[in-house]
Image 1 (cartoon, rainbow, N blue to C red):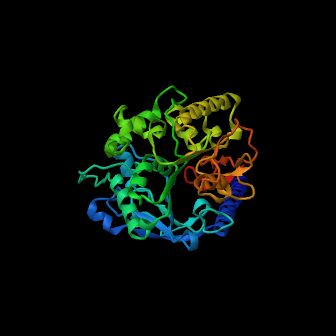
Image 2 (cartoon, rainbow, N blue to C red; image 1 turned 90 degrees about the vertical axis):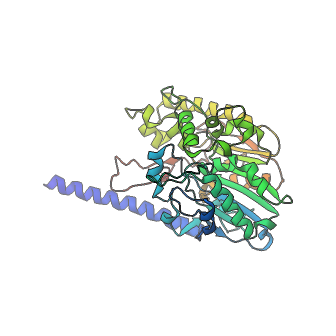
Length: 420
């Protein structure tokens, strides 16, 4: 009985410690971020441009000021994909499938910050965060809606409806514009880059920034083409083929045209690729997905790169080389920007600590914010690939909470509980 009492006290203490960590992070974020209210694109419903559940698409809009009043940054949210009816149904009634389930305010930080100290080049632009609710990086378009599931695969229509709504609110007078995004939103910014340029006024300077969106076609640790199969199923389920670049679909199977390496060479609009060479999502889900690791050999390694064995690190180094080989298709034109650090990270533009802070990651003494700003304004080109892990001491490597060890506290996938 005494042992049980002691264990309970230990569990309570551990819970208090983890809650204190969460609270500390929230306080820090509030000091560096601005809360912005949600806007629903209600007129999109009549066009069939809707989320998975049929609700209107949505975004958060912080208006530009002064010299930034005619400049626009449209950032697309990430959140993975759904590849069949079952996985799409699992998302339908969550914030990733329904604007009804989205929070009414989100915090703007990093590239979305309105603070000159934290975001010197874009702080006074019109900054928009588009919420993700279609499950296919805004590429789907299936007319029929199954009455049994009530799933709407209309992401491509939603993309156009959102941009048209912003054009009606002043973006039609844009002088400068950026289409950006993180993760699945980063993929959106690649796949829709030229489409965004075509929808914008011809006189505007338009460029695209993809953060953690350069997903590569690589075999997993078992030798299976897991991600290739998955992406093919996403494209087939959502009817995405007709909305992928024809320069790719005219020569490759549509599922292969979901991979940036197969479309990036033909993109005409200036494009900046920001990525970690050891992208945490890609290590977890492309290189070592659970289906390829039934005994959980990679479990601890995926939570914290410091836990990886020498053999696992070598496999990750090989994955990095595959990533760099795929990246080579971006080319060397000055219109292409490249910032590839050697961090175990995922999405570095929306988080203040990785975008711009005294201790943020740097390459050749240049922060991500400075690199993107210099490239956008043509102050200087930026194309830098970091040396191999663990060479960069400025990295903020993600450390994930292990739900097996901390069942009292639940952290969402890809939300770090601490940083090393």
